[in-house]
Amino acid sequence: MTFQDPDFGTVTVTVNPRARSIIMRPQVDGLRVTACAGASLKVVMSTIDKYRNRLVAKQHEIQKKGVSTPDEVECMRREAKIHLVRRTAELASMHGFCYSNISIRSSKSRWGSCSGRNSISLSLFLMKIPQHLQDYVILHELCHTVHHDHSPLFWQLLNTVTHGQAFQLRRELKQYDTL
Image (cartoon, rainbow, N blue to C red):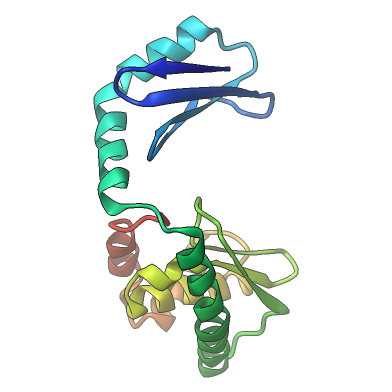
């Protein structure tokens, strides 16, 4: 369902039976809302109103940054396939990690991931952040090849390979988003 809102423009509401809450994602030209099964439109509207100021501020922030054009995204993808793949191999070799393969995706919800089979996936939008934070994300995923969780052992390993800077780098990375 879609409707117009004076603050956001087009609001698109979809129901996902697997959703456990109402998720709201500001976009350049609207607001995308994913509702859990059973959530009424009244509850959705109430939730939007509750967080309206924060959501409007986030939408303005996204609009200010601008969205990459399809040509810019393809250029970033080509650069990422060379740079990020090479850098992952270098860091894995340097720290003794093994991974099965690496893929570059246009993920907007996360910087990277590591599967149970040690396949690493990195967002091409890493190309928009400083090199030391790219390295942090890559090392984070490489550490997942040893510990497939965020246990204290995982954080200890990540802190070791980042020379005691894991938590500082994590905080710094939060200043960026994948858009």
